Length: 118
View 1 (tube, helix red, strand yellow):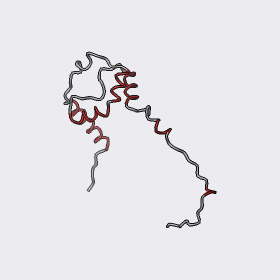
View 2: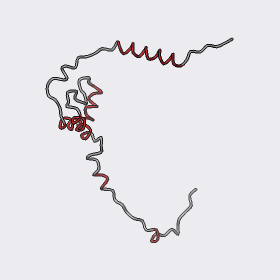
View 3: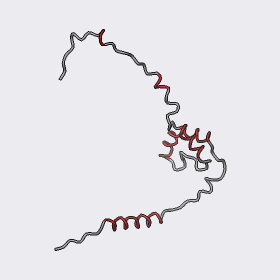
View 4: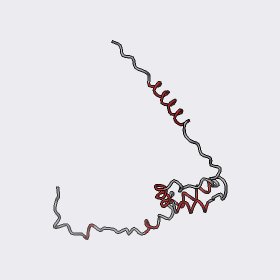
């Protein structure tokens, strides 16, 4: 008896149609209220970057808290947010300078009582 199998392209096409149908049922919300009022710039993004960990914890418990301001001026806000959250490592290099480097002189050390551990 001969087995007939459907091509994988058919399953890909079917899943794409299903995905489009399911996203078409999604509820859309008006963002006009978010886009009116104060526009946040670099310093707003810097502040939001500093408080991002606390905002994340608040987001877990409330739907009214967001980490990123929707009404921003674009690139400068994103740069401020990135610098404020430490995304490029700013404000984090101080601990690297405190590492103490010591040199070991093997000629002065005595290894008479050394044991071999297997």
